[in-house]
Image (tube, rainbow, N blue to C red; front, top):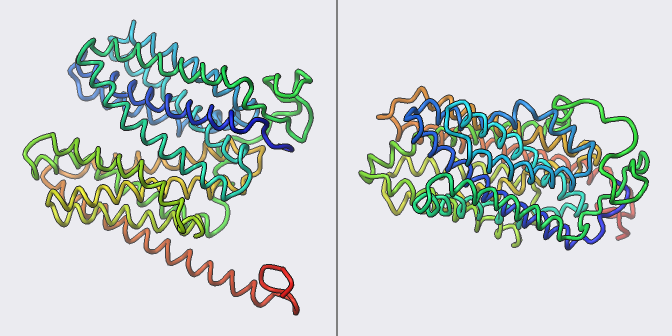
Amino acid sequence: MTAPVRRSRAAVLLVIVALLVSTVGDEVALVALALRGADETGLTSVVSAQMLAGLVPGIALGGVIGRVCDRWRLDVVLGITLALECVTALAAAAFANTPALLIGMMLVLGVLGAVAQTCVMALVPLLFPGSDAQLRVNSLMESVRNAGYIVGPLLVSLLTAHGGTGLALVVDAGTFASALRAARESGGGLAVPARAGGPRASGVEGTGTKEAGPPPRGGLRLGLSLLWAGTARRMMLTTIMITIAGTSVANVLLPFFTRDVSGGPAFYGTLLATWSVGLVVGPLLLRTGLRRCRTATIAVAAAALIGLAHAVVGAFPVVPVMLTAFLCGGMANAVQNVALRTHVMADCPPDVRGRVGAAYGATLQTAVAAGFALAGFAPAGWARWGILVGGTIGLLAGLAGWLHTRVSTSGAASVRAVSVPAGASASGEPR
């Protein structure tokens, strides 16, 4: 991109509104379809297949999604995606009553959700080229997204109690329609400029939908190669993936563990709500002096804290301790997400942001899937020890990654100090 996006305030409002409303919609669809699957079939295998159907598209179709987001205008792609999510939710409300349709609807929503998330991730560096600005905006968007994760399940519980899953899915369609309306009423807030390679097909800035020039080459493999380029980047991502896999094991085992601790399901919901509160509050930490730290260092340090939170829960199954640990763990989780996303996209070439964003999503979802699969080998009676082991592994991985980033930073600083010419400071300014 060769010019800043015009009317960026309207564009930011568009992205934030679309993100919040579509996140609520995603959660409503996920819960409502899972409840309908349980009611209509009575089979855990169907609900499990629905969950996987919502997760797999971001991994399997990452290359295609990345190409679409790099080839076409992001605001147009986001608008079409929201419209299709609206139609899909209405179709699910009317027709999804068999295992095949329930799984198929979740699969479609999984594809559309992956496209929307990639669009939003690629839009942030387009709207705010500076790393500091991206960190601030990503922090705000992380809080907004996580607020949607809280509102969605609460909304679907209220709706299903009064009108069943059909009403919940109809309202879900309304959330996506509202986000699409916000996009239209922004009045062109996302006037995405043409690429350096040539004008848009329409010849009018901000009105065409397709860009001139040859399509970008390479899909998910290209995105992954750029995402994982460099020893420091590989170490950081490996640390994050190990932490995510270890704590995803805890996600599966936690219902069994909390049943043994409190004797009922209410405490499980309380723990999840506490983690969600941490997810909303956590990004506010990046508005303090913490934002002056390197994003890679913040990400791996937060990963260590996430592992520590789970290890504490497994080691000390006492209700106040568990709630405190989950609040801190949720805050660290949000900080890690913001720092990692900012680090990945800050220096990403503009013409491959979509593919790098898709590769980013596929990488993290693969780690989640690995954790879910590993949890299947743990007996329900060993849930506490599975959580303790997963948290400890995440803590050790995070500490190793943090030490590596510290050593890398010290080494880079030493090299710069040695190479500074006489009469100049390390920053290149006159003494």
